Length: 572
Image 1 (cartoon, rainbow, N blue to C red):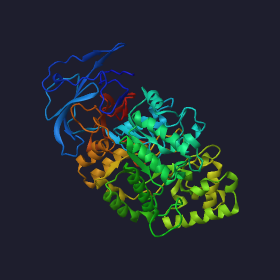
Image 2: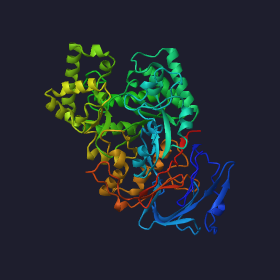
Image 3: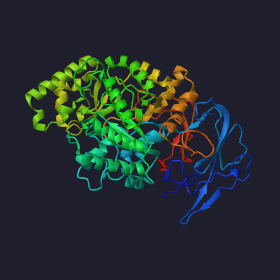
């Protein structure tokens, strides 16, 4: 177990189950009001001595994460836990921080991420630091059917884990993932097991239905993860191989998650009015059909459903937002969403399953290409989304000149039609190019969702080794604060959405609220001073003054201090 101690606070880092306690944690009555000792508590283990520091955050405006109105007060931290939250704490501490004019809030929880795929990298810090600088202390990972675990150790299909978006050195069991993550976490990670990964471990990206034995083998991997502490499971019904799974398989996966009282998060089959994952029908927008499908899956399996990244892609889809919201409310389904109106995906995301399931030779058939072009051209016109809205974010050599350009620009430069250029890019990159898509939502939809009771905030972004980075990975959560301030939204409700509400929905007790006994995940910020430079997408937001993760100070007076002090948050 990694152990950290410095003048800015300390807390042993590792893996603890939900509601569990580190063997080094002290939450005793003498640490509360009026304690006079200033000598740091020293606790011994068999191999080392760890100094447990006291930090007092004083004279701040406390937003406790419950949604209740703020109050002027103090927060006392000892080791990795909060020991007191009150209007006036008289206990002396090893360090007292004057928070006059600042907001003291629970550490922000990012409701949808994929950072579990970056824990095995050689320099994990560079992948997590931009999120810590936003005030994020915990991330829900394993979304969109994609997790770096849930695969048999002897699977011959490990290279296909990641949906064509992510890679992992050696995917395997959940237990090994948890073990190897110790000492490498710069934020807390609450992991979901991905259906796409579990399926890929059985038959790779094959489009054929699983046999009964293959289904049971897949579910065995899911059960292993859930028994070992995964908080739930996820679907990615736009990504291989999840998009090939029949209804019965999806229900079986969901029922396995429900058996352990886990949450089921779903990237639906369509996030737009028209989607190539469906046959051309015009009685109902495909985005609504996709929501109907996942509701039916969850209801059949008895699973608790959470709708991932509420987006209405394309101008023609924006008028679906109200109907989508009404249906979510009718079924009391929570959801998360971006602060920005663009997002990242893989270049194949708009291709229909029937095309992706073809061999490379079959894809070159004139009839196949005619059918594909016809469908794409009709779809983009009906959708209000064009190749001008697809920006190349990352691509291999020798095509780096395309970086930052949209597909329409590239087509003009190459003397091709937009659709031919798109298909060519898919072929040249083996479908691995990364893109940013504009028109995910519009500002009016974002404001509507911020005010909605069922919504939570997320980034759904990650740091790439090359190419253009996603602005949300650097600015997504503080931009919510800026939008809230501009719209004069109640700050206690905004903080609740990014802390206590998310912790409660995903089953993370002792996280998300400022309460004695909870882990000391805390973000202190200057609300009026929060700024985001939209012209510099990779710049650090201003206004985040202090961040503590499990009692360790990782942002100090606005300065980032690297520390692998995160914990794996497991379900018991």
